[in-house]
Image (cartoon, rainbow, N blue to C red; front, side):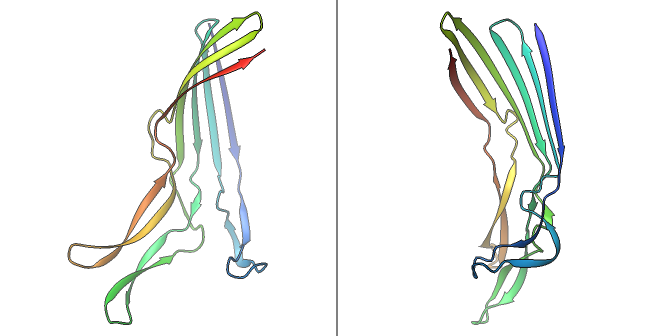
Length: 173
């Protein structure tokens, strides 16, 4: 019976001083100061606990964490349309000036190994995102109308996958 523990930590910073201008090719938009880049991930941690209760079975627990990515949130601005009706408009905050929530995921994998004269077959059952955590990777905004007829801006989060079971096999010889 053997237990193995592995860990990794990364500290990094990604910055940008311009972004592509989709309206005018070959004319990037430059910033007065550097901003965090879209996938700036300051802290990242991975932890693995591997337990081999017998020669043919392996159980692996894997924890992944990273700090939230930069995002550009929107605020609601009340406006009056040309027809005189009240409305709302989405106004973006400064580019990448906010952060999404931290990403956290716990996975577990059970592997059964079968050996033969010609090689080895491994069958596994894996549960990805065991805690079924909602890991946000973006926000969508949509204008909605309240019961009293007042327009407002609703924010909905987009998330990575929920709890995902998988089975699989690998062969080597």
